[in-house]
Image (spheres, rainbow, N blue to C red):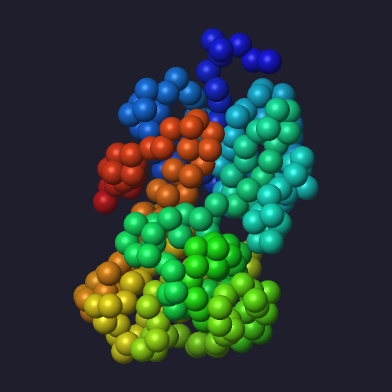
Length: 283
């Protein structure tokens, strides 16, 4: 058992780490909540990942944020992973239970929690622009939150159809997979649109999907789940057409907050985290 005099340790593993605001936000949260914890950022190359995880075990780290390119590669190095992480096939944060390191994926939860601050998701019709791991994670959480229907939109029809098939039975109505070459025009049934592009190791082709001004209206909510730091073009376009918007920074902050609450028991002030992120990113 560790001494109470020893500061609990958390870390970020990524490659590269330049421009990542996570440590800046977490340290600001520690100060605001008067937590005597330490957060460290480690640039770990893919070939050194196994050794890094061994070091985290030996040094007693309480938790880890795991960023690209390690989200999939770290899975077999952990003692076990949650059902959500297994379904998505990737881990973005890790927590410790006694001596065991448990991998989870809270990317979808971050999307849903950010949406919940704006709207009740029960019964909503959602369009997902993207068919990769992030889209899958968000879809699972949307189903759990009571969304009624989902349409998956991707440049690759096969990928859209495959994810739709994996989600069958999760929603009240059948999940549809739709191919789109560039601009997507929202249908009148859509109530929420989420931009959740595929990661680079998945092809990243969905990053080129954009929204057509056709179909954008004040009743529509548009959320951008692009990994930080993210351009705000899609959000600007939606806002100019009267849509309610949730930017990538708000979703990123929810993901950070979920991990911090699990690790420390303290629920961080989102406004403090947002101010820290904007300061770090020069927004």
